[in-house]
Length: 186
Ligand code: GRF
Image (cartoon, rainbow, N blue to C red; front, side):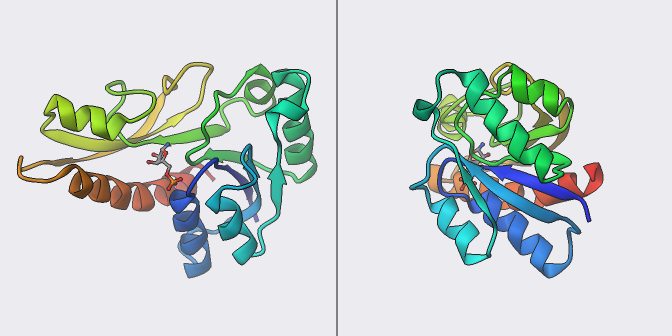
């Protein structure tokens, strides 16, 4: 069975959606590890609840980003991981991981890239008054949400939704789309 590693720094609801899809049998894969830069995040609790190994790497314990990423790369290669799935991982991926996992790192972003890259994209799009919201899954490169787009899904806002309603709809799309794309890639 193909092995994936999920990287998360926070809540981990996308991580949870992937776990659920695997447990339901909709996605045939094994999550070899949750990798986190934030050992106190809720994603860690989710992993523990499902007996998924957690690899916590705190950047301040390393002399450089290269050393930090080498530690992650050795761990993932040892575990025979085929694909790195970023799900709310709040760090830029550097050269060590990009070359060790060339074209094998993907990210999900809650906007229709190339519009609204970076943080707080849903809020920014909402304040901008966009009429079509969406989600993007893309390959990861050295930039902020700049890699080649793999899949997008969108919906039309009727203009009466609150920000929270838009956020809910976007997250629902994310939960479906990410597993679908992972399945295609694997
Ligand atoms: C998601 O909206 C994802 O698109 C973005 O970060 C958020 C992570 O949420 N990259 P969660 O931690 O999966 O709940």
